[in-house]
Length: 431
Image 1 (cartoon, rainbow, N blue to C red):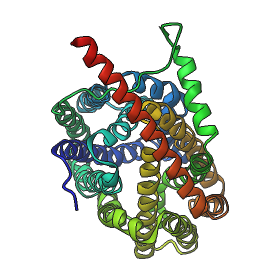
Image 2: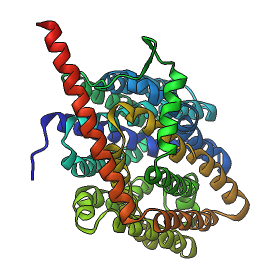
Image 3: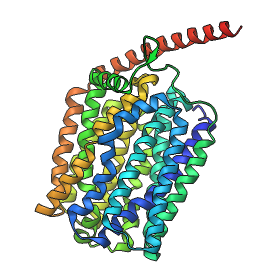
């Protein structure tokens, strides 16, 4: 097995530290919201504001990323997020936090996440070889999950019990450290092929955004993958939006045990991150996606029918494992199928659709929980997850996946030839 380069490990460490801070935040924010109000819709709005930037800004941000040095985007995004969370920590230390402040903070952090996630996925193919992508994506998933779930969340719930401001202060510090690690990556991480020009002038941002949208719309495999992931994310958002109340009222979990509960549930994601790339390599992408698509349907139904703590832990652990494997496959496919000079734009359109539906799912989940009870969102989620499974089973055949891989390989060979020709011309000019 080829050794992964040191640049990747710096990105891996930055992701782990940043996500440890995220874990602190993810636990502390709903706990703080639950102290301020017991309204299910108001608490669900925290999740809505966190994800709505994907719906509003993902596409233009993707075009900007294709114009920028992706390393600098990572640094700026983390520093801005650190400043936002640090500001809330100061307010919490000296004054009462209002619910609207949590909504504003969630929106700001969500906006920073759009920049960071799109850039980190765009930069990874520059750090590792193509045959290392699934392993690298799996390790990044492990770093993110371990940092968030097994480090950040238990620490967040513990610190919250001592002082409300502490978990937010720790989160702010983690973003600064992650930015420093990203800054340690040497070299330029701009795309090799610049965006097209018209009569010697750079194309407009709108034209570049349209290019990414059109490319995804005409790619059969990624178009259907986008639909499947969108349905999955909407289902997950519907249940996660009120999970803190589900844990308190249905599972009768005490506040101090909420963090450890989520940490135990995250074991499935951690295992999948470690072995997911190898599993996909052995069973094939389509079979892995079929299993990863069907299992959450069954686990969501099981949680809704039998809301007992130990059973919910088992079912959500299995669900997290399979969803993580799906995520590894989906990210790797985008990195392999999308040309580098278009990746920021195409990936942003993909995330605009697949992640942009999450605030919709969160609102729907909150409304369903308010009207029909906290178990009802799991039944609605099962229906959406069944539709996602149908997309994979009916519209993504093994032959179609293989054909898409071959087309992408041919395009990369052409682009490599163009880049070599450009570099030769530059060297001749210098001579």
